[in-house]
Image (cartoon, rainbow, N blue to C red; front, side, top):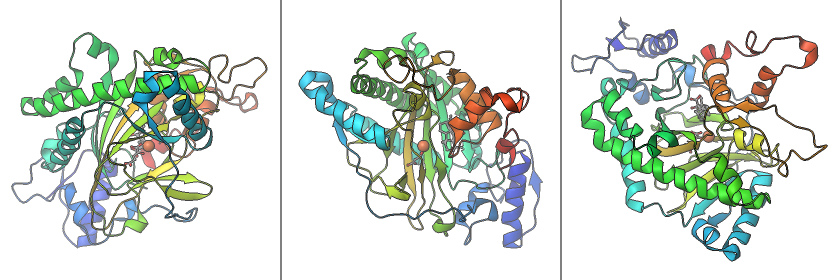
Amino acid sequence: MVYISNAPAASKLVAMVESARGGSLAVKGGEADDGADGTIVVLDLWRQPKIPAPFVWPRADALPSSPRELDVPVVDLAAALRDAAGMRPAAAQVAAACASHGFFQVTGHGVAPALARAALDGAAGFFRLPLATKQRARRAPGMVTGYTTAHSDRFVANLPWKETLSFAYRHAAAAAGDNVVVDYFASTLGDDFKPLGEVYQAYCEAMEEVSLAIMAVLGESLGLGSGYYRDFFADSSSIMRCNYYPPCPEPERTLGTGPHCDPSALTVLLQDGDVHGLQVLVGGAWRPVSPEPGAFVVNIGDTFMALTNGRYKSCLHRAVVRREQERRSLAFFLCPREDRVVRPPAGAGATAGERRLYPDFTWADFMRFTQRHYRADTRTLDAFAHWLRPPACSGAAPAASPPTATQAATV
Ligand SMILES: C=C1C[C@]23C[C@H]1CC[C@H]2[C@]1(C)CCC[C@@](C)(C(=O)O)[C@H]1[C@@H]3C(=O)O
Ligand SMILES: O=C(O)CCC(=O)C(=O)O
Ligand SMILES: [Fe+2]
């Protein structure tokens, strides 16, 4: 028997796996099965000799991969926050990186190595659990949070070779003493998962602090002062995502995470060990950003690009997979409070006479766009801006006719 979720996309996928093996397909909807009765679970996907067709990404527009490491500055956050003498070089490093590709690394962040290790190990342990256990946290339709295998509940083609677990981290809740992450783990996976929830609660708190420190440097780098963006994101509503990329029999035909710009404001990424995977598109080639021990990789997302009227770049990136090695990464997506209006301040792109590149929007709307109308890809922010404010001549009404309304469900 094959366990599948109720989604048609997933049933198609599993059917393909089955037919590739010449086995018979029995579809089981509803509750997850732990596989103890001989059930073949979706995890068998990761052990196929060939990748199923829905995982094959088109190569027509394939750009070359370069072995040359991307030059990403390493910014010492502790020095930057200590005094003006430390801030000056940090702000200059960040300004240069963000004006070109938007990627840099941070050290001096104050995150205890043991906490980072526990978060990575926790992800390793979680993804090794039986599918049925992980499915207790499965993503609800239209939500970004939850557990997914290859996003097969959302899409039928260009499936990513990964499993993910995502959860929300809201500053307001944490400030009120609510342990939202612990509660999430306990309520979806069970009380046994409280200790893991505690690890991620602490990790998210640390990530928020790191993100706000970076916001201080970004503000300085744009001449707005260290408080401007720090205040804007002081009541953030962020997303934490654990990525697991299994070894892949045909790594050159698929991707762990497809080419995209992060819709969020800022991403703080922790890569596990020395397994390379993250690549950034710069100068027409995919360039690796390898894990630096003790450093986090930071990148500007679309929301911050909009906050600077395009001055700071949200750059295309992807994650490749490997034949022999599995890989894990932890991404903390810093996002504004849902109802905050994203608009560049005077001095960072909204000076008199400068053309606004993007309309005002709220994170709630942008988030909804990526979960219900559009699959985040190479041009998410432009598609969203167009959806919010179609060109006058098109006559289209935004909510009634998102340009790619069917994409999220099918592609
Ligand atoms: C708002 C979001 C959409 C995604 C999750 C968060 C932040 C990053 C986005 C994502 C990772 C970009 C690549 C494509 C995506 C579908 C993925 O492969 O996971 C994106 C996320 C998503 O919609 O789940
Ligand atoms: O796993 C990685 O290295 C990158 C993942 C990523 O870009 C994302 O989750 O947005
Ligand atoms: Fe990303």
